[in-house]
Amino acid sequence: MAKLESYIKLSVHVNNSGLNSLKNSLTTLEFNAEVIKAATSENHSMIALMDCSFIAKSGEKTFGLDQFYNGSHNRVERGLEVSLVAVVDVETEVGYGLLAEQTFDQTFCPDLTRMDYYLHHLEITQPQLPTQVRYLAVDGAYAKEPFVTGVRALNDHLLDTFISTLGLSPTLIKSHPNYQNLLSYGVIAA
Image (cartoon, rainbow, N blue to C red; front, side):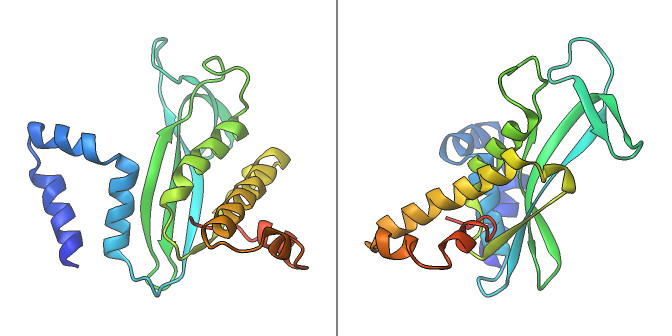
């Protein structure tokens, strides 16, 4: 708990020069991951969550302005969208935001779909997920083949890293009858 209090003090009392040195040493994602680690128990089960929120916005020059789904009105509207990856301590029922990012408009990266963007957001966040995370909970809108396949690929990469780091036999692991089930298990934290 003392570590968490230190992070809170640091975030409240940092002056501009201190903030610049903090930016050089930790990313927001790493900082949030450290706060979550300090605030939670390693013995508690956790799940990862991912969802988007619509932000009403008008104007012509606002970066990211595009057509996004507004769940409050059950329709697509012009505005902004923020994507959030968070974790929830299942036992205390407390949630922690890990990384929020603005969704780009389709003209910024026309070769990428929104699902590609969401998957990339999850991919950059995944290494900082607490080790207790075994499942990813998402809205039904994410249940599209590219996103599901991408999550499976993330798991495959993580299992390969795990096998290599521990010096295990990849043939033995990958030939195990439950190997495919492991790939579908959820997002395995690094």
